[in-house]
Image 1: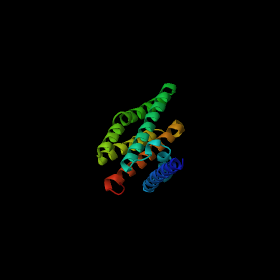
Image 2: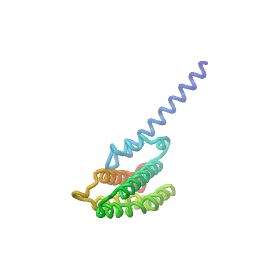
Image 3: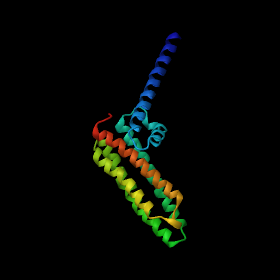
Image 4: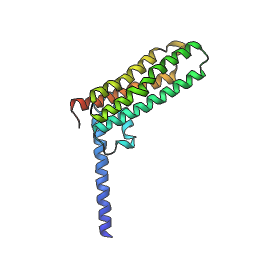
Length: 176
């Protein structure tokens, strides 16, 4: 019985050190991004960040970005279906046209490039998501402003900035 207790204590200690190391790496990486709080909350809330390295964390952030972009595209499509104003419908359709290649091509290819160690290509694909969100945002102003879409575009841009910052750490070889 004493041996079993000792083994359980040893396993608990090893597990806690592993979590601490993961948290330390996440903290170290997030300090080098433009949105520390967003980075911390996003990565620490995701179970896929356990026992991973910087490249893995970049992949997790890129997948979260893809999920966010996919959700935003679905939101835009829903708004198009509800739009009664032709000008609003055109503006939303323009945003959908911007988001479709991001969701179908740019981000999936960037995620694949990350897994292959092609960090520069990954960075380009990820940063393109922010550019498209900005282009969508610029399409709305004054009475045509959709606050919920604006919030989504800003979040997508910020997540993209965080993901690019992590990929740049890999490019520079600063954190393994």
